[in-house]
Image 1 (tube, rainbow, N blue to C red):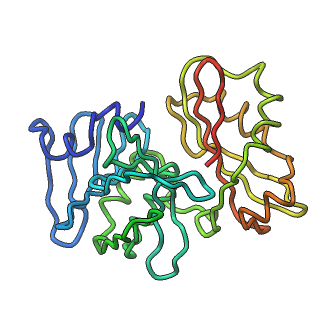
Image 2 (cartoon, rainbow, N blue to C red; image 1 turned 135 degrees about the vertical axis):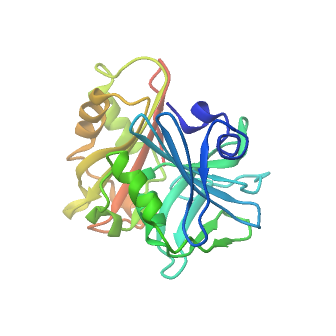
Length: 263
């Protein structure tokens, strides 16, 4: 279930749901629980809220209070917003925004990676093309996030978190992969985000899904397996500044027509 659909808006879940049990912290993340839903969140005087949610072992991370981008421009990943580590400037995660349903709420396409970064407490910077940057200091005590991740069955560390993430600007790799899996692709509406490691000769390796909406085991086999072993064209690799050892991210959004979108 998507974060937006399950909560309508994360702010509603956090601030206007009296049934949730809230716990405040001076130097850590505030928390809220209701049944099988856990949330860790941090609110800022600048108007943003970062919320990490676990519901039925499904992890999602949202940023509420983003500026409305009137004339959105996408970078080579296709994202509207990118969250950077403020110290290094390296991208931590890309953020999706549904401009029609919730134009000021962004959903992380790699929730586990982002949540682990949030747990570590280093400041983050939210960036969008043509928009002022927003830098947020994170709570110094990440124990509430660590507990939420553990309860959600999410690993507390992953060596891939240290890799730079990139995106491809064209559909080439996805279109070729689609021809392999289209016959077996599930019908209906779903979204799956897949990451692959770039190895020698621009080949994709170790592809795995990092987000599935709704969750389905077959998605991993169909999509990730189809991308393994494909080579990125030299001109596309140059445009995306792909380097060996980095991650490349794809986001599939499908209806019954199996539309595929790269990030």
